Length: 286
Image (cartoon, rainbow, N blue to C red; front, side, top):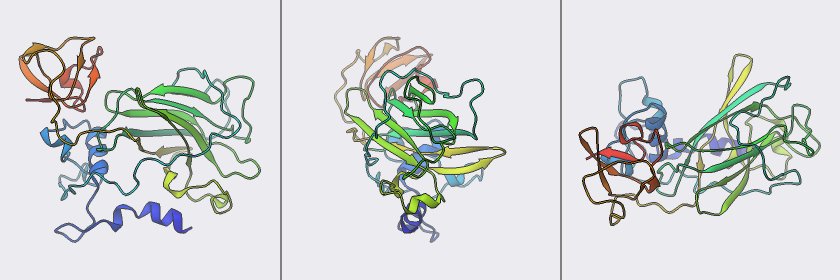
């Protein structure tokens, strides 16, 4: 359908670069840098280093200066009648004997400046392979939090169909201290996408076969204000203070770690494993 075509060709409609090819968006570039584990330089908030299409090719494409990826904040949708609070915290919804085609969904959560957002609560629920929801327990229900890179991974099964609806996953996303976004994620190429009144092509996942299983990807964009450049006044410890677990850091705070000085890129409270060299989304070497 036209909506699916528009979603797939969003990047293709971008103004071309010097080689005449469409330029990738900043969000696409940043996603690839995060996925590749590349240290994001000072230009993290202006330009990350790699584009998804260039990973492994040894080439660096021309970058676009705009954060807008053509999709704006992820659109909201109804939660439907089957949401239940207090789901268990787990990244895999699979239980022993769960039937269906295995599905792994990965992605990132970004704010308005295309910077990753850590600690975002993602609460997923869905129908089973037969199109039924578990309304008495928590089968195929669970929540998790994005990591320091703003990344998440969900392991589940492809949901089944039921009358009136196409295949979809439900999700609630909430950045720390921000309102909840309730929405749904869809599968491309589904015949019922044309007849489901709730279907929104902007919420299509990218899906591919992986042997007998399927892999999907989707990046959320939340309405979280972010500064594209580190202009905030330091709010943490004095410059030169050694990085420490439990300390609240803000943009442009400076810390020492391992004999080097690091600049904070986004506000967070230090956790074990978030040492500056390990989380380029939060720190860069000064």
